[in-house]
Length: 142
Length: 485
Image (tube, rainbow over all chains, first blue to last red; front, side, top):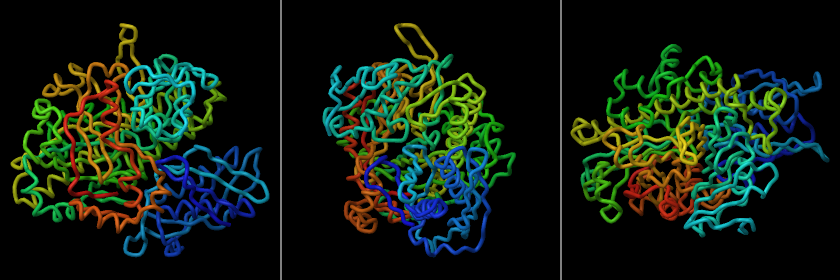
């Protein structure tokens, strides 16, 4: 699994592209890409605490939209920097259900090199695609 | 950049795309820009403005301001007025940072008096006005107090001792939008925003100490009436919004509208970021009520930041801030929707005007203006990049051609990702210091993204608004100190 930020695109925001062999790894990579915009040294984010997440959506792209929204929520509501773990996605009633943990710790400017404060996940050009593997394109408002 | 071949020049710095560049356009696109700004605009601006022109109920034109750049859904720098009887409201036409805006604060101090303590002032502002990821403010509110903030905006702050009646009078809408209903807001939005009163945020949000050089006063009589009268007078300008609270309100309603737009109202949009609902629908009215809560949070946020600025100046100068002439000039938002009366074909009509990265700019005589400014036109505050400068302008009568809307900043030309690769935050900080600008930043990476060359030429943007008859420049403000989110 890997991710990158695209040079071109929505000028004042950031477009990320994530790729992985399966859907669970794709969501994990997109979550890391989101977290890495907020904290440069992502490895310094210790999995000291966990929040469980359970979400449903009609489509995979909206499932990712809501999942990344959870990370942004915990960043503001509890000052928690998190990474995704134990992501499980299953088809349900014509849509999808996600269960995951967001593991992390309170942000600490003495250890975490903080960067951009992500405001929101946008629907602009939002895509989750299955070709050889899986890929996702997400634009975040920063 | 190749311009769309259908583009037509209408007047000096005014261009039009007829309603045929894409199917479903209900009105033409009108672009306000010099030829240089027009040619430098992203292609996506034209496409997005054409997409906006397809929204139900749009009246007049889909407008593009001279600082416009590629956004999501609407371009940043986009204006669309809807007929509130049968048109839609779209969170994408307002932005995630609801009621994000600019506040200009003047002092009677001049550069020579501030320079010896400049670093102390900036350091203290950096301490007292938290910036960056996940920052928390100094104001602690109980749940019922936070509900009061959402209902009352800046008025709540003044009641609590964080400001004066004059501050309110010189804030757009007196710092309070009526009709804010906290029951339209999710618990998640409240949890995200309740600790953030008094914080700048990050991205392009900042707080600057600035100087008005004598050669940068373009209309001395107007400037004096607005309080800019001394050579090298010192001012403060800051840019921030409704923080996580507003971001969550917007996110919640984009998600809600996606679910009901087609199923319930048969609305189809070209881009999901244009998610919308009929303004008169229950969902549209709930967003309208929630959006006004976020607007009030944003007015309150800027009001308590002004209180912190007063504390810092009192501490550093050991004088009452009022004795230093520290006073509000104006506060105006640039991510908002408002019900306003405008004349169409000579007949007054109520319109729901979406402004995303665009500033309201009423002309002289508007009843919404405080009495001391009523004859001058509405003050407009244009935030430039931290390396260049910012402007105070006023609205003019000919602004009716854009439903009294003008630019909001200098507008980005380079993506954040590209800017981060092109510039180094620490080097930039040193370079700015050599130019006489002392910067404290919450993040060096974030600082690099805001380098001057990542932005359009603010002078050109301001000139375009003047040529197009949208607003008139009064004075230019040059930064000497900056707190960067």
